[in-house]
Image (cartoon, rainbow, N blue to C red; front, side, top):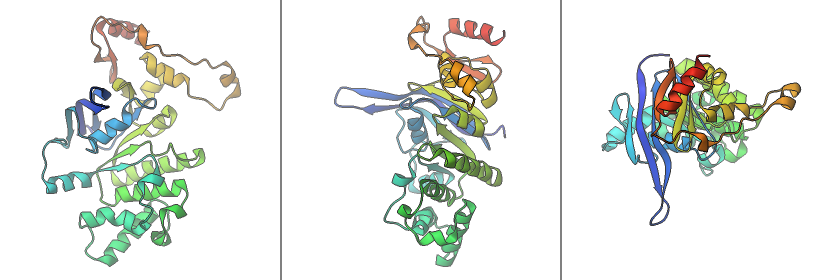
Length: 310
């Protein structure tokens, strides 16, 4: 993993209007960096703001507050049409539901080639066709699939088409928004292994969003844990998995089932109670162990440090 920062997110906030006098805070001051060539996992329960974070980073949503920088350039600043095109080519997204993210009226050829056409990446129809057929084979499909429509494929195959579409414009960074949650368990590992292989071959950087901590650990270099719009813990994948500090992370990890009947019979779920936190001051992100950050107050920080060093 490089030490070059590809993406910098600082105090990112996203609020949604819900009626005339009500505002929903989906993301509430999230800060993290993603380095070139790494996979950064973002986990948390449904509704915690992780998908909104990803969509705000890529400008599907405009940020309410905060800053997103990609290769040192402000993502949410005012941009010309050419600047937006350049940005959209370098940052792509793989969506959660492959069924709804693919246009049912378009052939696979036209779906994958859409980005190629927008960015003028093919000189003629022959080159366009060749590029699409090559991408289909790269993601484990056949070139004969190019003439078919999305409904003719399984869920796993449709997600491979979505991956090929993202790769078509040769991006540097891909946001994978729960790309395996709509798939059968037997297919999930195949898609994750494909993403890992593509990363190795093409030098890609990923933001991998999911609620399954065990799968995120498998693919990620570092993991950030979100709860109610805030990031509460961030650490290297192995460190987070084996030495969780924040009570919410401990609760998430305790819910992961293992293929061991004896363990499952005795497994106890750790319940998270948000009311037990110190409310005397505003919590901040603090480094409790080297490269291991936790959102906490100064009092909780001292407590967590003692626990971490036992």
